[in-house]
Amino acid sequence: MKIIHLLLFTIVGLSGTALASESPSVKTLAVTNPSHLLFVGNSYFYYNDSLHDHLLRMVISAGLHDRADTNFKSVTINGARLNHHEVANYLKPGQLGVDEPFQVVILQGHSSAALIEEQSAQFENAVEQHAKSIRSRGGEVALYMTPAYVFPHKLQRNDMMRDIDSLYTNMGNKVDALVVPVGLAFEESYRRRPDLQLHKAYDGTHPSLLGTYLGAATVFASLYNQSPVGNQYDIFGAIDAETRLFLQQVAHDTVKNFYQQSD
Image (cartoon, rainbow, N blue to C red):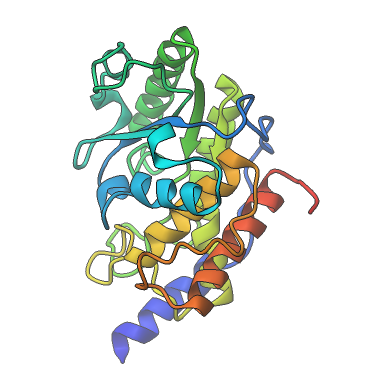
């Protein structure tokens, strides 16, 4: 009971809308319904059967693509920062078993990138370098805004999401990248339903299965400019209909608010 109370206290502290120093300047991709995506990050992507697989199933469920028409790849290194990745090499034709160029590359930085000045600088430098490599191959750049820590993570603090929002939004604007507001979606979900656990209870950092689903729904809404609400993909029955629709609505609302779009 003590742990539950502490977790709820943390969640209440996270509630509210995080404000970046800038609003996102890129609100949609140039490519419509991308079929070739590359995810670059760490365990935040590969937990729970990998976020890219859940996104693919949502895309198929929405009727946007058949599986045979798509190629979603994910390159992850546990604990990695973006400067650990050789993105330019990943993009060489055939390097990842994909001959066609990736239309969009989604970059996810380390969860502590906004907490330490040195790590923030490394993140910014890596994003700039990777963005040049991606564009040299004809792709677009997207940044996956990570969620804040919650209890029991020892680095959890109530204003962490604001720092993350600012880092990702400002960097997205600097390199003309689409920022996917996953962290803000987590925050909004906790505000509406503090009982719904989006992080692994044992560490307060990695996503639970519901957290991965919310992340995929937020990526879907951001990249495809289409609401995920009503999408029938439910992780093969692992998520009940009420929770599925709730998470989809949170993703939809967060993306619309972040990009300042009307329904």
